[in-house]
Length: 329
Image 1 (cartoon, rainbow, N blue to C red):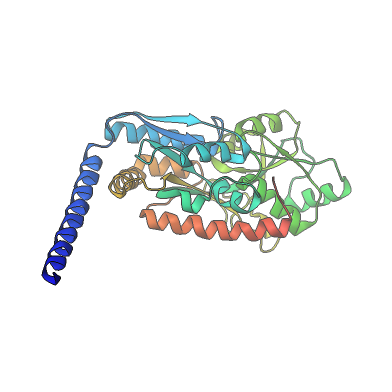
Image 2: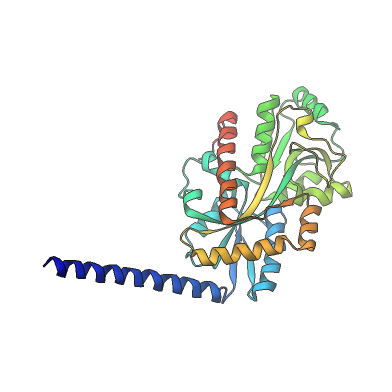
């Protein structure tokens, strides 16, 4: 009887091992054939902002390298949560991806009723870039420096409207951090993306914005917007004459980071293939130069490397959200 049970156990173990090998073989075959049809890459903001610019830049090269279209699908709404939720609920087959951005880390503590847990429900695939935000104002705004801006805002309470690309974005929280550290009062005006906010700023309908550099640098260089400071600890190579916010507000630092994510349980071979392709694209001189023109630096690394960035940024912005008392239901 004992021999029979042992034999059954060995058969079961063998069957289980065969299933594991079969599953691995199927998964590897899937990666070899991937992609066999167009891939949808969801961006949680309208066209024209930093997330959209990066997605289209990398998506075009992925299409060329892998022989299938990487279609950018803009799904704005609820501070990036509409687009994120659509990817969380998509089939984990590699054919629906997410342009991951700072809002995904911020929203974990900013929103009290999310239907998903970002770190649990989205698998990190690859980092793309890290860029400064820029404190920008219309060209005719009376303040020419951060110190002058603080003085103006304190002397004119209720007259400064702070635009953002939506609740929970790095643009929004960079401004909230500035408010908390300086004591200035600014009315937050959230838009459904950076591009419409920039348009209204050029038109003089809002007075300040802590925008991602890729979506505003062309306007800064053209003189249609004026940069008061960058939000990173050091100056940007693309705007070398623009000081940092921290030069005036000691200890202030913020930056925006971007990457690719996929629904949890997406096969590892598919994730690894996407990671390898993205890293190869980021290493191309033309792509590196283009990202540098946008004020960014590339984030080449493994899926785990990008996952560590997501976790650390989520923890950092949770402290800022609590410090600022910001909440969205």
